[in-house]
Image (cartoon, rainbow, N blue to C red; front, side):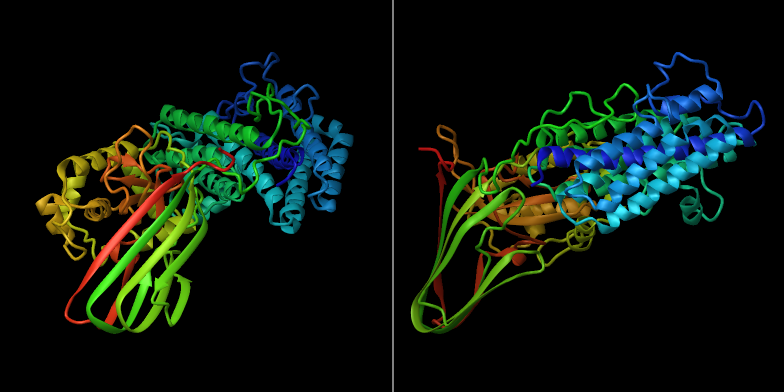
Length: 631
């Protein structure tokens, strides 16, 4: 992991470089449209001050020369283009150990050249040339930086800073210029020119025209720059880049949760149907979430961070401070619940068996919140062959063959697992927005969820009766977390836990009709309900740890257990245990997941000989251990 001061410097280098380029382009395009539009049809210079947050503190007149000087070269404005270039150069110098040498040289040279020529911004012709050189210089610098930098944590911090800054400015531009991108009623003959200027200010005009070759529809411009994942400067695409960068960092849970919340908030809006006021509300809601991502980064990785989240506004800090390194916890020191799991399966045959071939899903998975530190598979009699591989779901599978004669086959898996509590999702949008985002999210995790976990599977159908049951909880515009929680509670209340009533071959619709079964049945009913309304859901197998001292044991403890998981684009998989009516916590040990029980059954196989029948005994013992270092 990087030193805190180095990580912070790279992060701010990315932010300030992006800020300088975006502000320069904004002023350049605004000046062109101000000249091109007839008197009375331009929007004046106040929107530029609103974009950078200076509209409430501005004490000068709104004359072009004063506003332009403030935004470009004013030494008293820490977010001016020149000040941003200077701050970027300073942070490049502090992080020179992890950045390509030519990038710092280019940044320092760009800042010095623009400083030497600052007087040229006093004329329109000189200003246009000055701004174009800033934009081209920043783009050249970005190419040198991101094209040659090593793919490690330093790159992740720089890209996170860049995309947070880009998304923040896009929201601010749309909020300040909402009346230009939402069509007037009655139509104004210059409305299209003003909307085009906003797109050009965000470097989005040509990509927008390619995406919308015919006459654009109402609200298509704000929808494009907010939600189009294929456009790299859209807010949705920036959030995706931030999310991917955060995944490269340790201890990223808090930042990931806020980033996912911002993605889901954005996915739930419909810019095509918004008024000016509604668009201003939406674009005002996203920047605080971006600030929260920054705060999570500062708290976790940057020692001595300031309380106010930095941003484009002049009153925000202009340079990243240098602080002492605060090391993160070593990778092997988790604050986790530790379990020893012993899973023993015993087959007893009526007559000696000649040959048995088996497949086992018994090794607990390694996930973001779970680590399997040891695993041992003991087979008696010893197998003639044993192999391990990973299936298409990423589960660890062991296959083995035992040759006879033998009358008893014992398979015992011993595992030690550390489990951390996953962060609970924050405020989430309506479930219809989650469904819509699932349809268009292009990230690999979402693509996998769409392709593997929405269609009916061998044991879990997609059925009208399951959809009707789910829709009682998934009412229109209901937040997805509330709907999932209520469906979980209803399955828990409506279905009786009755071991022995069903078997692994009992159809889900029969379980649904009889309203009784075991954890495996409840999980598959829950998965079927979610898939039947279009959401992606998977079946999860594992174990339950013992309850805390003095509390009752959960249903399914000291046995194989099963629950369900629903995919929330931008946030990830949310695990739900309908058998116990709760979100999955650090008391659940995950072994495998798939489309249904068939994909993840703990042990299955075939036997040659053994007579006409056999008995099967399964014993699971889960023991909670004290955390490392406890007496």
